[in-house]
Image (cartoon, rainbow, N blue to C red; front, top):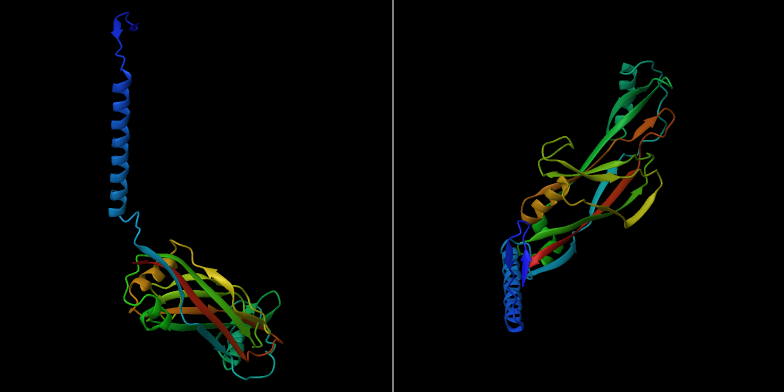
Amino acid sequence: MKAMKPNNQPTTLITLGPQTSNTRRRLLRGALSLGAGLALLGAAACGLVSTNILDKTFELSAQKFSLDFGTTTGKVPTVACTVAGDPKCTTLASQVSAAGGTATGICDTTAKSCSAEIMVTKSYPVTLSNDPSFAQTIGSKAISIVKAIELSYGASNMSTVNLPEMMLYIGPDTAKLPTDKDVYLIDKIPAITKGTVIPDKSRKIIVQAGSPAFERFSYYLSNPKVPFLLMLSGKPVVKANDDLPSGKVDVTITPAFTVGLPL
């Protein structure tokens, strides 16, 4: 059988018999199977595929952050002001500070009245190797991969202060403020009005994989003897004729992790 090339030169086509064709197919299937097997072995060697990893989920002990504004009674005094930075607002802040927290005077130039912003930061120290749940679930095993991190929380605001949204951070045990080195934002906890009770573990924060906070948690999980902090920070504001800050706020956070462990 012949076919003509574009230059009109004849081309000879070879036709395989049935036995030769079947042999070729078997060889091709064998080569494909061998290639697939080698690809899987290569993936396993690179850590992409593993049949020796067991997923484990565990919770740490509940961690309670308590903000105590004391037992002061009375109202925030009315102090008139006209411009930002009015020194009269600093005087107001010193009176509010006596009720708990560190206050900064602010002039509301629209209302022509001073208010006080209270800076509150509370830290909870954590050493994973000392946590009973970690010791029981992980022990001395090396964590191969961190798959998920969730923080369940609840709160009880029995203070006279409406709490605005608060920021939850993770950082080294030497950190004092959210602005310190290697302190990373985990997420925001929405505002909690005074008199509100949120049942424990009824709300969740999911730490996004790939975020700086996720990477820091992963580091501490892989190095469980290294201490770190969870830090909660908020800035409630009280205005003229509000109750002076008093009473107590409790926020309870329970971290949970899903990790891969070697069998």
